[in-house]
Length: 336
Image (cartoon, rainbow, N blue to C red; front, side, top):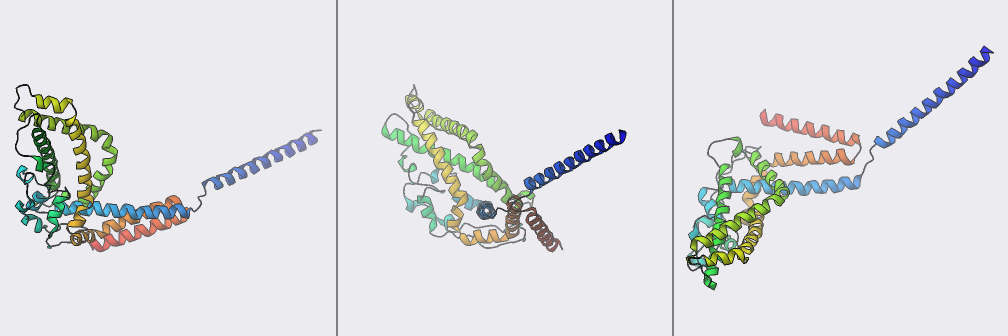
């Protein structure tokens, strides 16, 4: 009897062990199916194309920023005028274009190739064209509407207010830009004057702008509204400030603030993304070539990341190892 019970017990135990082993095997196989990454060449290709575009934008933003930080102070004032008299010239022939024709570029400092250029920028005849486009330096409308500083409820009073308000806003914006650009243009060699830092800084700023727009737009609108309203207040000679009350409560100040906010943002993007391409492509190309190593290894890092995300692990690890070897080899040559 005991032998029979023992055999039955052993038989059931063997069945349970076999069932457990089978179940364990099924779980392991299911895990392998879940964790095994399939190669998605379509997404990988799309990601690589995105990497190319991202790198081009990165190069453009960084090189353009170095372009502006490398200009002499006189050239910066030409492109970002802060003298009110430069806004109120009514005739293009009255403009002194000597600064525009020969804005000088300082020696390039730094760069991963220690690239130094003594070339000078020559904008040539494009100076007046840039002015007519409304890009700094800016003349013409709405500044051409200004006859004097008198502001009242007449049409000319409104024109004076509009032109002067826009000029004061743009002058203060350009003063801010000159402070930022000038911070990276110190004679002392610091980390802030290196190409690498300026490239990273400028790209970080451009990345943050879309994220901060919901906060920045209301703040900028209020600042512009306050500035244009104050311009009306200080130039309104009526004892009850009727002109100020009209433009503040009837909508003109809000309209001016909104329109200047939009146009100044478009000008900012054009100035720091495209304008140097019109001014001097060859110099911009040299700046990019001075930092080609940084741009190359950025693109390589993006490619490795795309490979690890969209392809099998063996491809990802191979790409990572090759990237590290190439990076170490380049660093060895630089500091040898």
